[in-house]
Length: 341
Image (tube, rainbow, N blue to C red; front, top):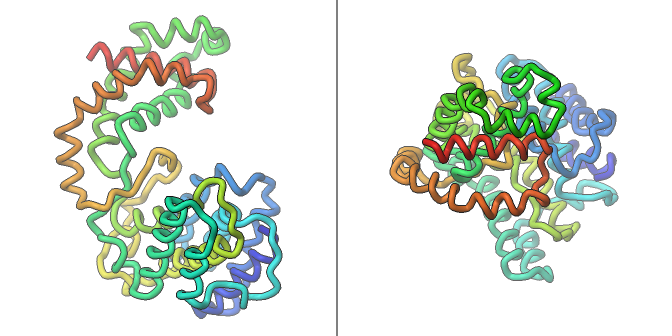
């Protein structure tokens, strides 16, 4: 998205939400900031950064720190680039104003029916939040969970890859593919990782990663456009509406919310370690947390076996998996642990 478009969107949101001139300036400046960070491309691969900046903005807001507006502006820049390419709009009159016109544009678009339905689902969410508030869309008993059992295995492979120099300090092993393969199939590797792996699987599969309003805000931030679709007018309207609602509830006082949790009130013991979350593994499940926990408890071993049954086909797909060679060596070592327990 062009800097001029980021600026117009930010100014419109600041005006709509009644920011002070000082906070509006910081917000607009923050929205433009990532173009000077050099971390291109901004359109892809920024989900973790988006979540980190939104969470930081909320924590700064609790402290009455004006740079909450700048951090949130940074996050919105990446979200906006995800939706809209470099187009130029003249002023904020091009942004979303008429809900019926917005829906009609989706109806008239030449989309396949499944894509049209996906756009309608996104629009319905944003319109409900806009018109009747976040609590009308989001049940406080929902949470964001690992998508499936496989994602719990994969995230531990990520962790092991990061910790590998500690597990195996011998650089001659780490730098030699054959030696590394031998190590991850060894009893030493199993002994070093077995307990942590099993605990990680149980925790990640049976318990939500985030709950309450934090889950709602992160779910909004991770909404993405349907693949291979680029209707500029519709995507621009969604981008503006999405940016506005994320801003409204990230920079909102506690009384704006129906319930109380670590998103509405600062609680040092409940800080979320965003850096450890892998957005590609997570999904919002729109059912009460206790129900999902019990369902997953009952099918835990069945899902483990389902994953092991699928393992041969997963190995065949290795060439197309966008992972490092080290990660691809580690994963079979973890599978061996699963098979022997």
